[in-house]
Amino acid sequence: MNGNRTGVPQSSTFIVADDRIPFPETDQVLRCRTSPALFQIEDIPNTDQDPRAREKALAQAKHACSGCPIVRDCLKWALANPTLTRTGVWAATTKRDRTQLRKQLMARLGEDWVGVVAERDRHRRERARAARAVPPTARELALARLELESIPTRPAPYNRWKEPITPQRAASNLRVLALVASGKAA
Ligand code: SF4
Image 1: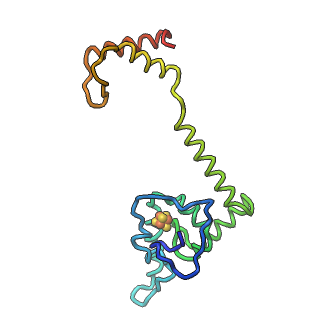
Image 2 (image 1 turned 90 degrees about the vertical axis):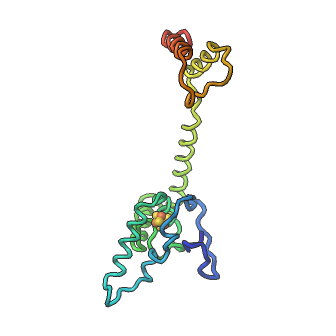
Image 3 (image 1 turned 45 degrees about the vertical axis):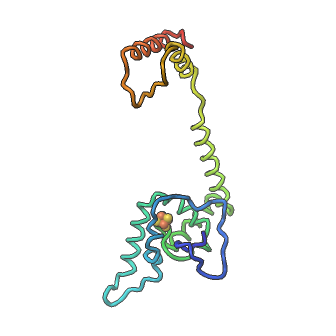
């Protein structure tokens, strides 16, 4: 990411982004990539025909960002990369907004606020990963075991989402549930 939303280098000087906060990946169509000129509000002049042209473009760009699926991460990236986001609207903020936000972050988190934010993000991702990898409970394991044991002769794996439940399967499920409820399955 070089600060140019179309991905075309802007000048011969290539500025490396701060990789502690990577730009969010997404397959979604982003308005700032399909209509980058709209977000480059400094390039939109007010004219006699439209004395509020820039103000209107700013409102449009902010509106587009507010519906963007990656707005939060885009904002973090834009704040962490002041050199790459000197102009334009990024995550519904103007240059002045971003300067103000960076000052607030520095006052709250210290000089290395980018590092602090990146570290918090890393912890958050790890917690989410751990939550997804929670092992099954003893009750869930018992249910799975009992279901296998109580239906030893089924001809093919039962697809619960596609096949209708049979009276035999309903009775078997009831037996399993009764065993679990009585505590014998633990
Ligand atoms: S939030 Fe960021 S990525 Fe999304 S449209 Fe705005 S500038 Fe583009």
